[in-house]
Amino acid sequence: MSKLSLDRILQSQGFGTRKYCRALIEDGEVSIAGEVHDNYKESIDTDGLVLRVFDEEWVYRERVYIALYKPANYECSRKPSHHPGVLTLLPEQYTWREVQPVGRLDHDTTGMLLISDDGAFIHAQSSPKRHVPKVYQATTQDPVTPELVAQLLSGVQLHDEPAPLSALVCEQRGERQLEIVLEQGKYHQVKRMLAAAGNHCGALHRSAIGGLQLEALGLKEGEWCYLNEEQLALLAPA
Image (tube, rainbow, N blue to C red; front, side, top):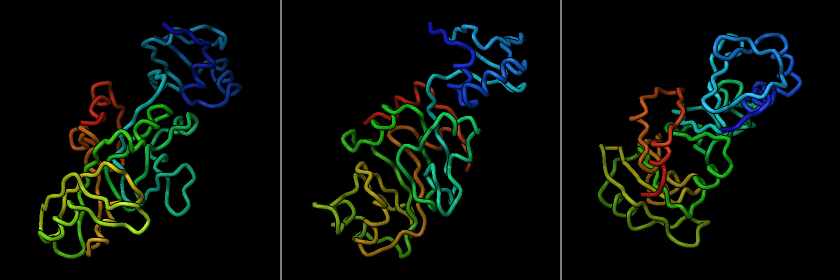
C-alpha cells in the first residue's frame, strides 16, 4: 500500500505542475468514487485508485508501458524536426510524464513501438545484450531471390560495423516480400542490410518484439494500448 498527497498523485499522472494540480483540486475538478476531493494535502491510497478529472476517468499507474501501432510519417523523437512526433498520438498527460519511445523506428517505418516512463525498462529493452528478437516485414524494390535470402542469413558487411551482420530468420513471403528477424537493433539495420546485399527496402513494418505480436493486440494504425504483466513478459528474450 502506498499513500501520496492528492496533488502529488495528479502531478505524477501528468496533469501539470504541482501548482496547477493544486488549483484543479481546489476548484473541485477531482473526484474519487463519485465524491469530490478538494483538499490537495489529503493523503490517498494509490492501490487500485481511479480518479475522475474534468469528468474523465483516469486509472492511477505508477509507471506506464504502452504499445503503439506507429503509422508512417511520424518521428520517434520528443523533439521531431520534419514530421509529427509519435507522442502526439497519446494523451497530453504523457508528455508531462516524460514518456519516451523505446528505441526508434524510421519515420516511414510502421509497426510496433514501445513507449514508457520507466527508465530501467527502457534501458533493458534497448540493450543489445538482451538479444530480444524483432520481427520485420520488408517490401523490396527488386524481386526476392534465394541468393538474397542466403546472403542475409549468412551475413553482410556494413561499412561501419567490425563484423558482418546476419538475420536470425529470413523467409520469402512474396515476390517482393521478406520476413526478417533481427536481434542486434543497429541503426537502419534492415534497410542497410538489404542495400549491402544488392537490393533495396521499399517499405518496412515491425510486426513483433520478442513474443509480443502486434496483430494480437488488435490495434489499428495510430492506436495504442497499455501492456499488462503477461504481455510485458512476452518481451523477454526467447
